[in-house]
Amino acid sequence: MGFIADRMSRIKPSPTVAVTAKANELKAQGVDVIGLGAGEPDFDTPDHIKEAGCKAIAEGKTKYGPPPGILPLREAICRKFERDNGLTYTPDQISVGCGGKQTIFNAMQATVNPGDEVIIPAPYWVSYTDIALLCEGAPVVIDCPAEAGFKLTPDQLRAAVTPKTKWLMLNSPSNPTGACYTRDELKALAAVLLEEANAHVHVMTDDMYEHIVYDGFEFSTIAEAEPALFGRTLTLNGLSKAYSMTGWRLGYAAGDAELIKQMNKLNSQSVTSPATFVQWAGVAALDGDHSFLAERNAVFKQRRDLVVSMLNAAEGLECLTPEGAFYVYPSCAGVIGKKTPDGTVIDGDEAFVKYLLEAEGVACVHGEAFGLSPYFRISYATSTEALEEACTRIQRACEKLS
Image (cartoon, rainbow, N blue to C red; front, side, top):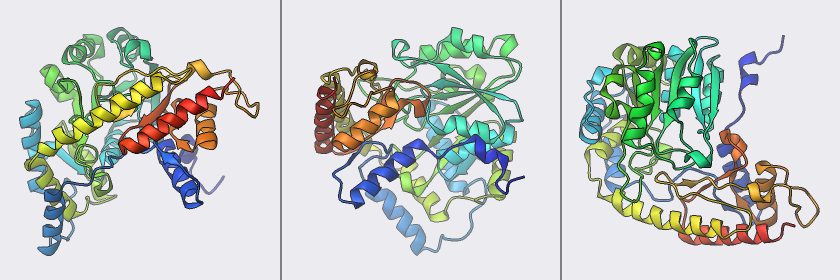
């Protein structure tokens, strides 16, 4: 019997974190690398949020916080759900965690028994499947290709549900595709779950990119679209993306009070709670001025349009225009089977991404990491100048293939 637990063999390190680490390592060696792997806005945290965090430190709000999160933050989260989504929660239905990733981990740890199935539409955020596996669950991955707008259909959902299904995992706007479900599309999925045979299935919806949408798209979350699912839905959100607070590590979940109680029990035996002064900054973020969101989204939209246009001009690549988030997920099917200048055959999206890094110093993430090939993910949450240069390099790399 080995010293390391068997469960660790079920998972792998986060590919997106690994790509960023590799890009930083090469930069430190003096290599000219443009990193497009990190899902992290290049904008700074807004000043009023930073000031609230500093004020909390100055006022001595640096002691242990309660495992559910400080009450003022949970109250602010309740106000957010009422204001933005028309959903009514009470503070005992809120769990605050160290980022969205921890809230997902807590939810699955609290509910998934060995062999329980978690339906995960692909492409998916890289951690969904690994967290389910770590909790001894069975990810049920459903391919949702570009032809379907990277979205799950009601027929696919109905066919995937079994007596062992515990959760349906939804993410809109999506990481890695930027695809967004309309209210009608969510109602259609909800109708499947409201069928008597599927009454045992719960929904975990990751709304982390809620405020980053374009072209007049109207965001809805599934409990808002179908109130009959309210009691079976765990709604996840956080401050990392829209508020440029990735390093502050602040996420939250809202749902059934008993589930939340169990998630908070996990907090009490693990992190206790996020840093107290960070939670006070979270209050300022949720209750404060949101005018910066429209300004930043306008910049993101310009970057999106630039990247989509330049990628579609690259030989062998096809890129849909996403409705939200700050990613594109282009197909590289047109370059599979081609050879690099040194004679290496591009036999998949991982080989293509490796070629981009080695030949042109562009770091992005291969589609296999997100469960759907042959695609790759680019984050356009970086400067316009860097994106233009990166896309020029990608075009050049594609031209060199034969």
